[in-house]
Image (tube, rainbow, N blue to C red; front, side, top):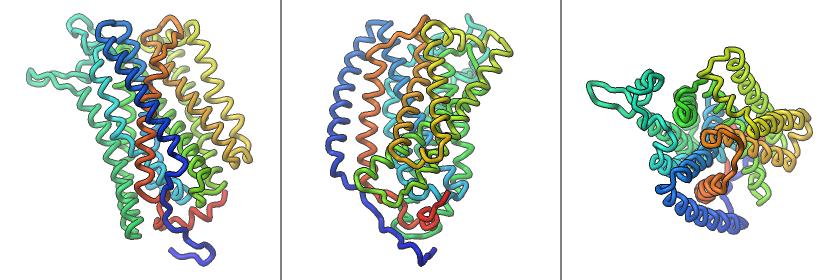
Length: 410
């Protein structure tokens, strides 16, 4: 594709100058966090209450980053499935974020070690629990007298599907940088049609297996969509922060205020979508008043959890919604970045309210592990991201839609 009004920019490599302090801080925090987490983890083997706290705090931290990384893959798939032009110049950072999934899989190991502490149904005898007995076909079906661990098979499949497509899209994108061959764009578009339903199924069932099954007696037909809404919103917020950080370091001059405007609009849209799904789930469960459904909200409407829930609704929806309604705000990178940080804090709170009431049903009971665990996981993921971002150009320099992206106008 040629255009006489715009000179195509050359591929831009990441300059690690200025990130030394960030990498050093991430390494120090990661090592300290890992040591502290290991100490608590070993002590937990002899203290059941500490084991529950460590296991659920680690699960909370793991889910926070899983949703962000999984959401990044969603934006890549949508980019290729719709043959979008606006996102060409920011797509490489989506690819770098999504490619962290294999690294994140390593942090699933502590959850396997403390599996019976997290998922109580693993130690439940179906003969003594008719509710669980009716669901064994999903978790651990018996076929021909052999117990099949479907729960763990599915968990491995989630990591495989997310990692496979993330690395496949990144590989084609990098190959196009080298050859300029349009066939890579066509292949990525074709693969996106296969990836989209697999992504939808994976994030839905991951939400069911890893989160809903914390209380195997509870269920919600909208749970998968609720988890997806938070993943898409939080990943877009992280993308904005990454792009802004790179621009402050003198990179990505190809990204202009029009691109920020589009990303800001997606923040607005998914803030509304998250609120819509959350309200719909609450309303349907409240209206039906089925005991197996209402117990989730009964706990979270108790004492201090109720206060946090009210704050979540205001902070996760009303505040971003009212701010992002204004067009000019979406074109001010500093303000949009501040809103993105706020949204990530609300996503953090959202997952905290989802996970921690399982061990503190009486009310909010913060523990140092609630910060140590996510900081530990996040620090190592930051190091992995800094490593990945330097391996290839910061944007797809030979994408056929690059000129369209550079000429973006809203």
